[in-house]
Length: 311
Image (tube, rainbow, N blue to C red; front, side, top):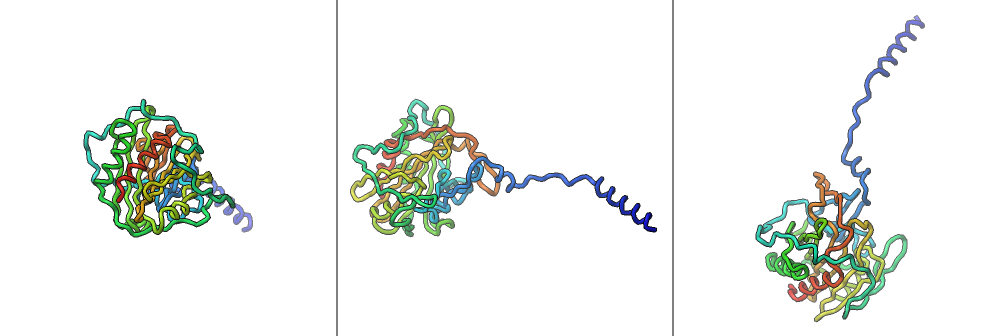
């Protein structure tokens, strides 16, 4: 009887061992874990990206930026919406700028004429912060979408001599990510070996322009002092280029208008055709130019045009 039981047990073990293993499955989490980029979070809704994955949060850069501002979180790039753009006009302006007008990536730390330096961020514990903390968002209604788009596209066109291509826009009067109104526009320009981007975020802030700018000196994770100028009460704050990943550099300019309007202009060394969408997550950025489409002076000029526009 014991021998029969042993034989039965051995037969059962062989039967289990002979069953083929279940097929290996690859989940989205696995793909993300194998990705090539760090997880990123950006401005008031900031971008989250793992392996180059940029998690969409309503539209570009503000996703978790409210939580990240002043805390040294370094975004992968500007926040980008995965929803279809609203009312994107198809006009003759949908052409790309010739590469001959594209400058090289600027070197940080060289103030522009008439610009000085803002306060130095405070470094420590692996991140940088401002002495006064992060600026707070206000509930200011958005300016007219068409007029803002015309001013922004016109300012970019002036820098390149040809109209840029409008690739995304979203005017959310009650952003679910910020619980505040915010707008987003993105145009692409031809850099010869591919597109580059110039993006605009339209937000609002509480308080005085100078104090808000002071509170945001480390908003984009840079530990270097930003450049700053003041024009008719408006404060323009230009940050050094972010070259965390040299293939996908980006640079930010913030404009604080009296009355609470804040514009955030970002120039980035990649464009719409460099993105591969991952359903339900966002997109990956597979390639970039390794340089920026606008230098310090060009980015400042776009900010000056928005300052003159006001609103």
